[in-house]
Length: 381
Image 1 (cartoon, rainbow, N blue to C red):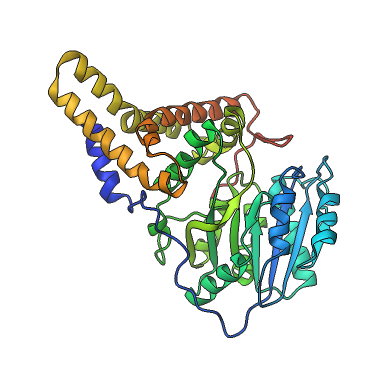
Image 2: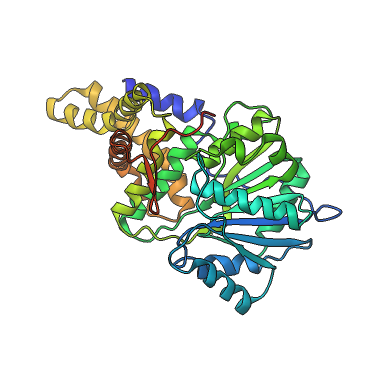
C-alpha cells in the first residue's frame, strides 16, 4: 500500500514530471539579434566531433556568432581535427585553444569553460554564451530558436535536455529512464516558474546571458562542481536569474554507449555527488527506490503465491501507474512501449549504480571521467 500511495502522489503531486510536452516556450524574432559566443569544452572527442562540430559551424543565425572550442588536454588529436573540420566545412568562425591542466580546485570541464568564456569576453561583444558539449549535434536553427526564446521570455538561462542516443539493448533500457528519473527529481514545470526553489539545467545545451553569468560569478563560483549543470542553474537563480529547462526536439547527443559498462560509469561517476556525499541521503535513496520501484513487482509475486488479494491488487495498481508514467518518455525516445513494465529492473540497476558510486568515493576514486578523478566533494551549492 505504501508504494501505491507513493505512486498516486508522484502521478499528481510531483509537477507532472512524467509529461514530455515541456519544449521551448513561445518565441518571437528579436528586433536585433544579439551576438553569441559558443563555448565547447572538449577532451578526447575525436570519435564524435565529425558528427557534432559541423552542426555548430552550420548554424543559421542572423546575428554574429563565433565558436570557441577548448581542447582540454586531449590525447587523440581533438584540436587538430576541429581545425580540419572548420577548414573543410566553413561556416561560423572557429577558435581552438587549450588552457593547460586545471588549476587547483577546478574540475576539467569547468576549467575549459572558464578559458572559453575568457576568450569570448576578450574577443567578442557577445551578449549570450552557448555552452554545449562536444558530443551534442544541433539542427541549423538551434541557436536562433534558443536566443529567440531567451529574448522573448526575458530568460537568463535556457537549457534543453538533448535527446540521447538510443540504439543498443542497454541504451534502450537505461537512457530513457535516465531522463525520466532526472525529470522526477527536477520537474521541468516547477523549474520554469519564476522564483521557484527547484532548479536545474542540462549541461549539453545551455544558453546563458552574459551579464547573468557575471552576476553569478560563473564559472569561478562553481569551479569544484562535478554536477556542473545543476550547480550552474543554482548559481544563476541565487542571483535572481530566470531559468527555463525542457526537452529538445532538434538537439541530439551523438555519443554512443554500446555496453552496460559505459552507461554504468556515466551514472555512477556523479550519483553520490548528487547526494552530497551524505551516507544518510544514500540510505534514504536506496530505501526510496526499493519502496517505489521494487516493491510493486514483489507485492504482485507475493500476492499471487500466497493468494493475498490486497497485496496483489495494490502491487499491480502501483506497477501499472509506474509503467503508465514511463510511456510518454518511451514515446519521446521512439522506443517500444513493452519496455514500460521493465522499469523496476532498470531502477534496480540505478540503485546498484548509486551504491557503487558511494563505494568508489570511499575508496578514494571519486568521480572518474576520461583519466581524471575527483575524489573531493564538490563545492556546496
